[in-house]
Image (cartoon, rainbow, N blue to C red; front, side):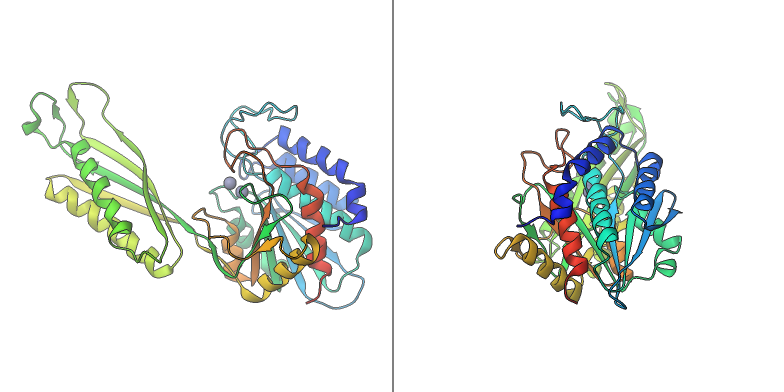
Length: 384
Ligand SMILES: [Zn+2]
Ligand SMILES: [Zn+2]
């Protein structure tokens, strides 16, 4: 791997910017300080800037100096997570309950680094749209920008996304065509029984006992009902009922998530979760009401752009550093919405380290900043 010399020269500034954003994390759609910094820097690089797409989203437009060519969208996310940081770094979060636990501070900074380099050289054909999106963590900021006319106002022939990946070694990357991240949907089940004195259970219908049966029955939807070659997850993640020792509550509320890759599997599990919950409740004399909310679609990489991204990564990181055999992740990714509308691809960039994404001691690896920025530049300047 050989960093772009100009980017290597301002790598320390990238670290300073990243740590500044890390100290001042902002939740989805509240990234006013972060998007302000992004817009100011893009303007300082001489890039045309558009603010306020999907709330706090920013787009920078830069034309190359080598003539006509494709319009390429490069996307970074800016939001932090609603959780406390347990790390002790000097640049740790200064905001209680808000933390850059997914490295979006690093993604934002890597794309700023690429913008700075490309604005100075303009050594490419066509146009680059730098897309800084809000609210990746569950709040669909990509879709909000698209509903605000992202691809109508800034047409893109291709769109690319990149995420740091602690499970991959620093200096490596993983990319493949097809599904790479799962569809991510929410399950909410309201179980209604009949409240009673706990010493006289026969006078009521216990929604906790009913919930236990529903949860057990739901386990079979994947283990017994889904093709073992077709990955899916149904997890019940919250059970809320009751308040004391001697009262059988009237209701119970279950929350969970459903992850799938194939549209048919998604449709089937949505229907079967309802069928099982309603049926089991009815069998035990209770009722269940299921609310299934579709979140992010699966993230599906398109072959052509995936080939170009893999080629750029191989040219930059070296042969052998880029794999195409990493398993898809059951995590969800908002970039999926962009890939539904525009051909493109999403790459995992290895950052190593002891802590996974969303761990309270996670921190973006600053060594990766000039690496990611250089890879973006390689992609834009590369053959197509
Ligand atoms: Zn995340
Ligand atoms: Zn993330």
